[in-house]
Image (cartoon, rainbow, N blue to C red; front, side):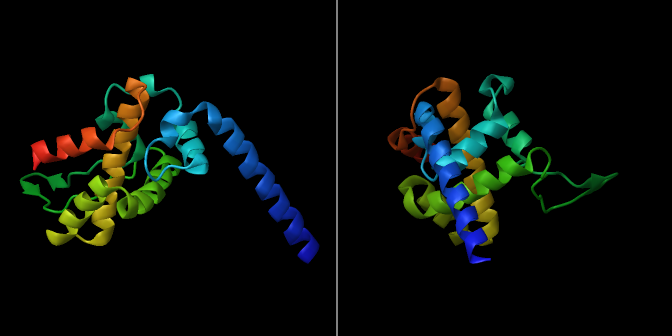
Length: 160
């Protein structure tokens, strides 16, 4: 059993090195905070050509990070949930990246903390950070420019 475990660990290490080597060609996605070679490969693999999406809203919908509306007749629900349509792999990769970015990126960290201060549940706040991160990734890939936290800070100050 130990030999099998060591063999599998060796294979995982080889795959990680291969993915890291392949991601050297895709430095734009790696400029986004919280996105390393493994998550970057998963995100790029699921998105494919960014030109398929007209705007960030459509990419968020593809990731299943858009809100659903519950209504029937005159009833309109007050609680919106994630639609979870689209790619579960992209949604998971963005969720994992959001968990890291909310701890280390000052702009998205303050966004997360503002949501928590407003009474949002930590999972709701992390989903909101994942949605923002999805929009950031769309901007980085569609404009072919690396992530600029100063630009994002200006955007947040204008909307606050």
